[in-house]
Length: 455
Picture 1: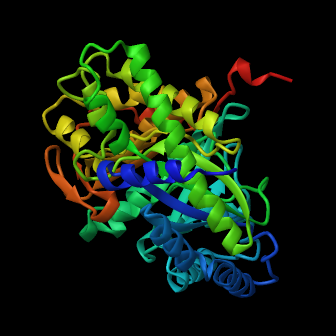
Picture 2 (picture 1 turned 30 degrees about the horizontal axis):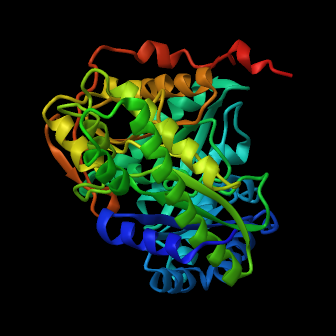
């Protein structure tokens, strides 16, 4: 794919004036050849392969960023789900040995995060995965860069409610282990339905078993660019014309991301994978998905009509990205992480945006309930039920949905929890107080919907 000088200069202008960045360049790496006859041997092979393959990732991306004038916010690695290479584990301590080796490798190569301490248990778990799941809270609490995810549902398999209940307990444990950090470990964990194998965004990234040996995936984020354009459009511009405006901007954002990604892949001698064009906000004012929604004509994000506006935004972003590249993947659309979006925080604090409205939004956005803080006293069963609702939206609509929720220890509704950096600050949101524990305790599974029978 060729890029003209004018196209590059236009991208640079967007970078300087409108908060355009490439949110992440993520090296996806297979670890399937690392399994050894002991967990110690496996951990050493994993550490060595990550360090060998990713040793030039950060410096190479920084060089490209400087040359092109396009900011790259994060450099990351995603790996084969670690539960798939932990076959030699005999205890939770063995799994933790692997977790710490992975985190040590991430530290040595200098990436911001490493995703893939993950398990896919939508139909059940093996004996090793049982140990692996038990290790997740401590693994996240005792490492800095490691991120984890668990897939508990698919449209083809239905929802594993035993796994959902267990994840609710894991989240509570992880929060308690990082009590002095506001439950920070939970910010590095995602529960999925229909998880995708080429997602470059954290905390849910992993390198799927259908992927190649090593690829470069790019996550492009341009809410500031879209926000600027929508706010400067005529106030009476019809919605279909706004959609066209966003689609054209999305095209340019995808081209910028592909420029960075393909050049990084060339210099590293790796294959280029995909562009994930997801509008992902940051705590900076203006770099906000909620502000884009408000610019359509709403007093606050969360007002009636904002689900329709988010649907328009997500669809336009996907259409523009699909036109710009033959390698669009990941989740591509719009993220709604509460703690990472200044306007979303404001809307939650004044009562315009509730947990229930966020759940409605997830039916049309890229993923799901993201970076939401709830009172520390919220029970594991209530957390599991919130997850179950979100998994049902994903399963019934054949889309990826996810939950990243933080029961902030000692915090109550109205408090703020500070996580720092791109993770931002989360307002503690109210949760429906009516009891759902008996439903979660039933266990079992929710069968796959009839639309799963497509063969």
